[in-house]
Image 1 (cartoon, one colour):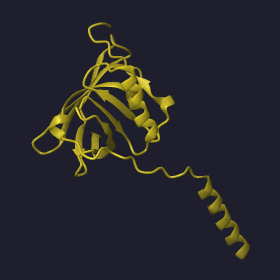
Image 2: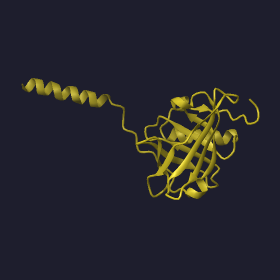
Image 3: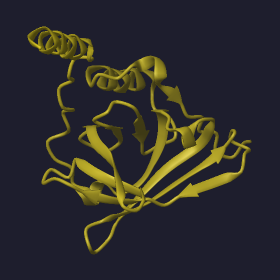
Image 4: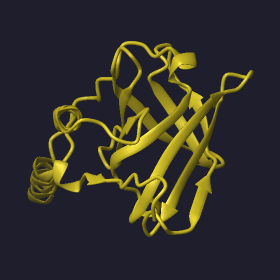
Length: 177
């Protein structure tokens, strides 16, 4: 009996040692002025969810509601700039006092984890990440940003523990298919 217990303990210890190391929690920005954050954000690049593969002209639009929730409209073209326009309308819920941690509800009752890990002081660029490090979004108030600025935003994701090999640029080709 003692041998079986010892073997069981050793097996559990071996399994625990095989788990990937725990990642530190994502560091969000210290504070977000929700009124300034509202409006249109062009998706410059992302680690796409299954619904976001092969999209173009993606725009995330936020509107603060009187009840404190965030009405969200995500519009994009499926298959490229000339593809059919699609729209999703999740609802955002601010979950902390800094306004940097949100739950985004696409389907009741589940709220997806959204964390603002970068926001420049002029509210021109932002990076939204998830604690799981599975999806992420680099967004800007304009459909294009300088390459050096894009590279800096990629480094925000790298420092947050993301695999940059999964990042995909989102074509922003307004006015031309």
